Amino acid sequence: MKTAQLFIIAISLLLLSCSPQEKKGPAMNLAEPTTVNDMSIYQLPSDWNTHRGKSISFEDLKGQPLVVVMIYTACKTACPRLVADMRAIEAKAAPDVSVPPQYILVSIDPTNDHPEKLKQFAADNGMDGEQWLFLQGTEAGVREFANVLSMKYKRIDPIDFSHSNIISVFDTEGVLTYQKEGLGLQNDEIIAQILQVSQKN
Image (cartoon, rainbow, N blue to C red; front, top):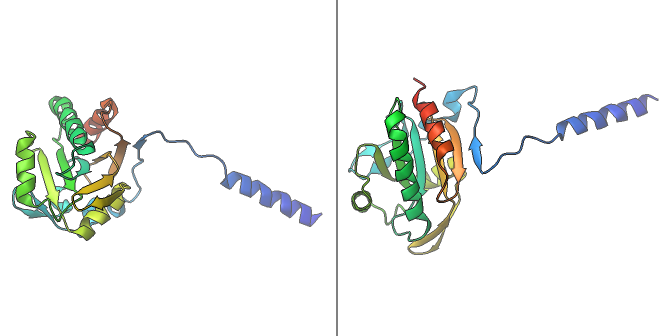
């Protein structure tokens, strides 16, 4: 009898542990962690070169919301559309933000995308205002940051990559709060999230 009761209890616990979780769509609104510092990109040890010729770490951006994509300048397919999405998001969000976000484009090709090339790319795309920041890191730093974003990329020839197309929003503490994957996005959700994190001081 005791064996049967134990079996029933064990099965009940197993069913509870396997209950379905809420399904997420292509956009992920991520709950804030209980320990902010442990989840913050300000913890990353990597240093980055900017398109303005400076060296920074992510901690230097503390206090600003961050809107981030990963691209490479030689891309002729997905990246131009990601860049267009970022420009559209910035233009729509700008009139209503309390704390202006930093819009960051991180190169997945640090070998070829040196700061001067990133500077020219920014100018060519009308993204040389202070709100725009292009970053070149090390191979290890880029890989580590891509892992934070769950962003996958792979070099397929000397100047070309296959890669995910993800726009990510970080709050003023450097915590990832929202992501959306795709191109030519309906960006109302992203803008709403930017406005939300820009009001958290």
